[in-house]
Length: 115
Length: 109
Image 1 (spheres, each protein chain N blue to C red):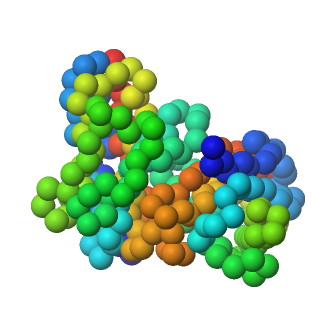
Image 2: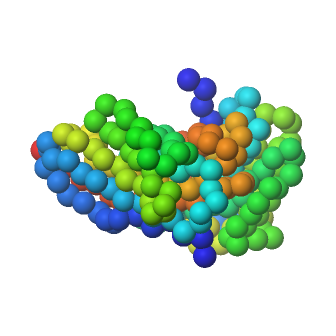
């Protein structure tokens, strides 16, 4: 079965450093998402991306965050200057369509630890 | 705020019991409601519901949507220890899916 691939599985960084989380969505999917889950808390929407632009973003997705699809297969989330509170599991997801009855496929996540 | 609320927050049962998990939402104009199981890392898909009153079934799990009541339930019959997980529901919108807080289910042998 096709799957969403995320790398790295774990990332440890110092506060203030930049990190890039990488994802390869399922090849025929058109919509891409980033979610995060702080330990013990709910899965929170960050951003959705379609046709090379952001479709919607949450309040969490402020100026320190950015997304990019640099080469037609990868989908990246960049955090410019990490804060302690950015420590979380970050999930990439993709779907064929959005909100039209299509299911969301999740990657296995990147555990980000900011020290 | 656009909320998805799940209840109970946690549940402990014994093997063989039947459980019912609840999900309620606030927005009326949505297109799908999804249920996921989260064990260690990524949520894995269980059901997608788009029409009210039509039950989806997979083995011991079943789910139904009630658009009038803005809610959905997930039933698990004859629970097994392998059913222990966090169960998430998510409301599908235009460009995002909003997740509930989840129900943590623990099934004791």
